[in-house]
Image 1 (cartoon, rainbow, N blue to C red):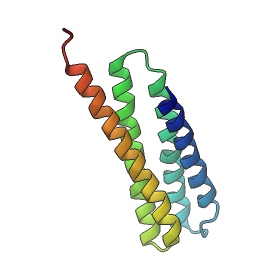
Image 2 (image 1 turned 135 degrees about the vertical axis):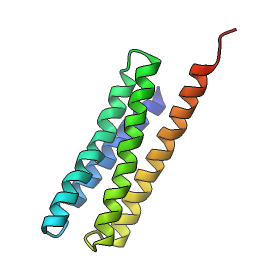
Image 3 (image 1 turned 90 degrees about the vertical axis):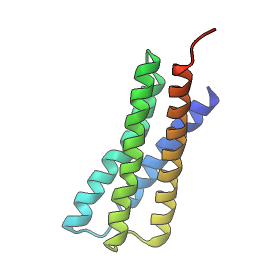
Image 4 (image 1 turned 120 degrees about the vertical axis):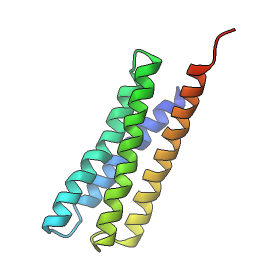
Length: 123
């Protein structure tokens, strides 16, 4: 249960960090559009993880985790585009990309464990 609380806090901190850095981006059509896409998926990571924690069944939990994985991976893509366009400083890019990558890895491992446990037969 403590791990779930830690991940709730961590995903929320990630979303807030992304939101703060987006506000610092130089204004341009590309950065505005990419920033909105990044903010949408960065906030969706935590929102969908919270929904997974409230899931009524194991199947719903695993399905929600799949969405969390998609969103955290998508964050890396938008971060990469912003960085390669020269809109995101190297240090900021490295930190946010690393966190998105770690979150993705954590949720992939959790989902694999959940799928493995769901396939085990009692007895």
